[in-house]
Amino acid sequence: MRIIRDVAAVRAAVDGAGRVGLVPTMGAFHEGHLSLIRAARESCDLVVVWLFVNPTQFNEASDLANYPRDEERDAALAAECGTDILFAPPVDQVYPAGFATTVSVSGIADVLEGAHRPGHFTGVATVVAKMLNMVGSDVAYFGAKDAQQVAVVRRMVADLDIPVTIDVLPIVREPDGLAMSSRNVRLSADERRRAAALHRGLAAARDAAAAGEQDAGILASIVADELERESITAEYVAVLDPETFEPVASVERPTLIALAARVGPVRLVDNMEVTP
Ligand code: AMP
Image (cartoon, rainbow, N blue to C red):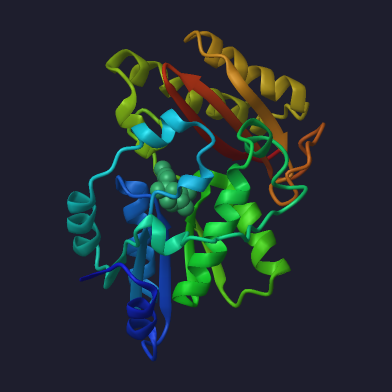
């Protein structure tokens, strides 16, 4: 595995390499990230892992300052999973002096995470557009954990005619159901235990929907009640169309329940598809 830090070198390495898979990450790898790298390895000739803690997608200075970073460990894990190139550019390579262009997706990026984290999706869409242009991959791999990010990226790729296929992989969870996240390491032991309520709530709503409950308000309150039991107040629990992210009142077809909640100092997101 090569570690590359500049665009010219990554373009040279990708040139003529066959089917190129790109796995965008901010590092601090866990099994969620590694599942994306393995999927890329299975179906691509060249696997590029992008490792960049993108400052423009953080809307809280303390979240950026406390974001876990360990490039040496990440490089070892990426290599083990078959990565060919770890592309880890410095901030001034991605945002050189004079940088003035942003990509902003309207509608889908304005609700939920977009509403609670001003500027977040403009940061995401801009860096993903740049990364896709820099690497020119055939496929880019994303996790279903960030469902709204997937919807925003798909919209942007379609709207800007970016020639890439977006592949989405399922959420990888801890044994108690908590979705793996780089931020989980910042939870205390007690917070870590309580955080399992996010998944319990979603699973309870999924079971209720499967048993015939269609009312979105009732399903959302099933999730919120489970959180309340651990004294967790959700920032939002939303019942949505998985493509448009428009709220739905009744579950008539596969529907997404998405939530965000703070547990101690950490803001966590999770989601689950429910079917009637
Ligand atoms: P991040 O480093 O948090 O920006 O995440 C990089 C990619 O890994 C994104 O596409 C995430 O959706 C994905 N990802 C993060 N956590 C998980 C998880 N628990 N399961 C599957 N994919 C994940």
